[in-house]
Amino acid sequence: MPFFIATDSFNNLAVTRYQGHCFAKDLSAEGFRTTLITDSAVFAMISRVNMVVVGAHTVMANGGIIGPVGLNMLALAAKQHGVPFVVVAATHKLCPLYPENPVVRLNELKSPSDLLQFGEFSECMELAPDSSACVLNVVNPAFDYVPPQLINLFITDIGGHNPSFMYRLIADYYSADDFIL
Image (cartoon, rainbow, N blue to C red; front, side):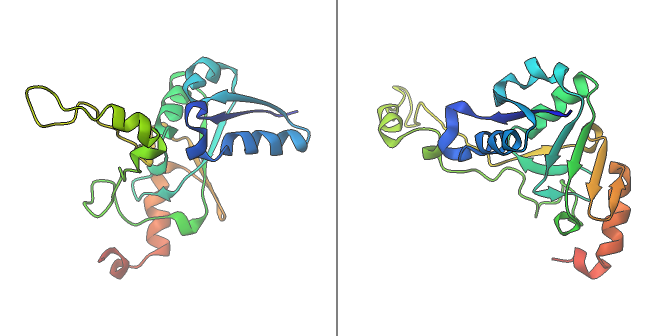
């Protein structure tokens, strides 16, 4: 019987909207053995995993993906422990661009208020004595880029593919005119 580990960012539950909790609850309701861990415990738990299966926001032309923040850490842990990293993505998520393209915004930033309440944030707004800069910067990236070297397999609605084949699959779905934005 399969065993699932769902991750959630316990220090940031309002932002993740309890997605890991909900996923774990749904799996348990279907009768699957499930363990819920923090996203920071991925390296500690990855040795107990047989396969990592994730979704992606976008599949790039080079076979890399753009996904939720923290996904690169999960892919690195899987690679380090020899655990297959599988991406499930429908063909509408294929993108004809490469991550180096300036049009691609890999690090869209979300509001700092997702991480800190305004009251906590305003207490840290003191200025450094020798400059006019704030002493606290809050960076809250929305996405991670996972390079194709960390991905073992793509599963799409038309079958399974190696990351090195994604450029060809994208070429089948996009004409050369689609590359001009």
